[in-house]
Every structure is written in structure tokens, then in C-alpha cells.
Length: 112
Length: 109
Image (cartoon, rainbow over all chains, first blue to last red; front, side, top):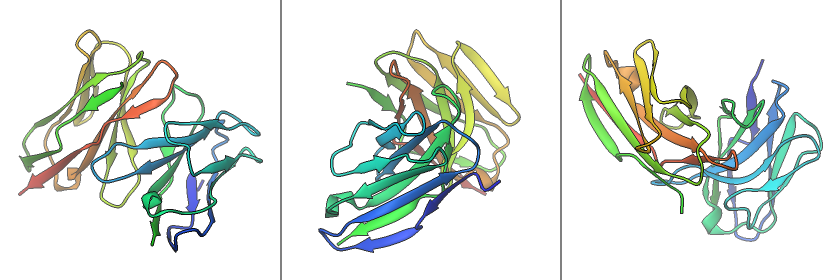
């Protein structure tokens, strides 16, 4: 079992460019989450999904979109990247909302 | 607003005991998690408390007092590999995790 994987691991974008981050899990988890982690701050929830075909906004959804077309995959899109989106992005998954979340290795994104 | 407070950084000596505190003010409470995060890596689960009291798991223990909005993580027999950040997170009334900024623990020989 690979657990939770994220692609890519590193990326540098120019302001205004778009990109998609891919999260995949092989644990048959229903719930999936996208967070960002910035220095001196706790993890902040961007968007989440409680099952295939569903998505919901988290604490900081602006500037991001998501899709969950397949149960095992959760995609995070940045349509027009801004320097404020420079961060480390983590994907997580879990069976249910009171269960332990398992995290992917993270994507380090720099927007110039 | 919702708030989780933890010390920013702590230093301890190899072989000693350290207690990392976490206080929280959230809209509802459905449990409290502790995660460990080594530099440049993903958070990994350490413990979960939903009822008051102490949960022990090997060298690590976690305590919860819901009436005080308080938890601590106790690490015994510290090892160099315990140098990491320790994240406190509370599951709120919407079953979303609210995260503290983390406590960076530095272990000295």
C-alpha cells in the first residue's frame, strides 16, 4: 500500500499560471482534504470531500477549485496563481470525520 | 473565533521528560488529536482523546480536560528522533479539524 501520494512534490509557477495538484489514496477512504501549511500558522483547510462526486469549501477556498471524480483521487486546481499561494500543500484522507487523517508527503509550491 | 494555543518552541534534554500544552476555544468539541511532524515531512498521528483523562501509548501520553479546554502531550525518555513539531488539533462541531500552529521540540544531547 502506497497510502496517500501527491504529485508533484515541488513546483515553481509564475503569477497568473495555472496548475493542478493530484492526490491519490489506496486505502478506500471516503473523506479527503486539502490543506495548506504556512510558517507560524496551523494547517488550514482549503476544500474537502466526503465521497466520490462531492466537494465542499473549507476555511480558505478562494482562489482554489477541487474535483473528486474518482473515490481514490482528489484534485486541487489553481486557475491563476498568486504569490500569496506560495505554501506547502498537504492532502489527507480518512474513513470518517472522527477518524485519524492520513497525510500525503506534501507539495511545495512557489509562485513568483 | 476558534483558537488553539501551543508554545512555539521548547527545548529538552535526551532521556528527560517534556510536557507540551495545548489550550483551545472552539465551536463545539468532538475530540482532540496530537500529530508529530518532522521537518519537511507530513504530519503523522500520535493520539486521540475524546473523554477526560490520560491516554498512554508507550513513551507518549496525552491528557484531556474538556471543562478547562486543555490538553497536554507527555513525552518520556526523550530520544534525539523526537526532535519534531507537535501539532494539536480539535475536531469542532462541524467535524472539521482546527489546528494549532505547532510546538517545535528541540532535543539536546
